[in-house]
Amino acid sequence: MPSMHTLKKYYWVVGVVVLLGLLIGTKMWTNTQPSALDSFAQCVTDAKATFYGAFWCPHCQAQKKLFGRSERLLPYVECSTPDSKGQTQVCIDKKITGYPLWEYADGTRASGQQTLAQLAEKTGCTLP
Picture 1 (tube, rainbow, N blue to C red):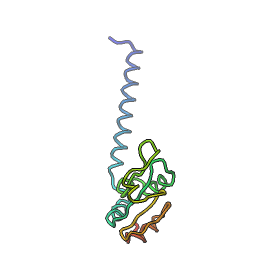
Picture 2 (cartoon, one colour):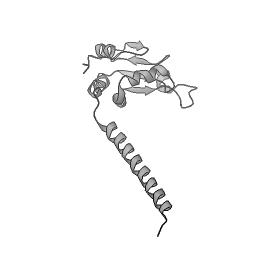
Picture 3 (tube, one colour):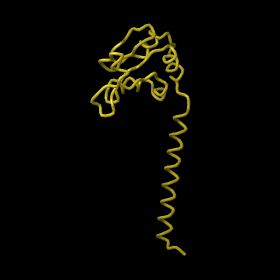
Picture 4 (tube, helix red, strand yellow):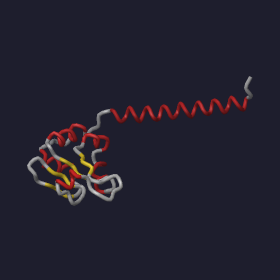
């Protein structure tokens, strides 16, 4: 029969594992639930707008953050190479020189972080 000390360790470890499992499960479930901006982000994508950015760009991160979990639906194009020292060919070909940059279906561009209202106006999408 295991000692009381061994049983306490066992229950503590099992408790931690169960707690971690619950936390991970909750996070996974939350990430799959619709977000308030899902329809707006999808509309922006359907309107043929494109968001060019770089993973290291703080303004790009702020732009994504405006969309919360709906960020996953954005028409985002990563322009930076993984080492952050170069630019991807698609962005070179598009002559993207700064981030973030939004390009719209009519060919116009907007540099810098855009508000949700600016994106709605340019794409014709309705904010929730």
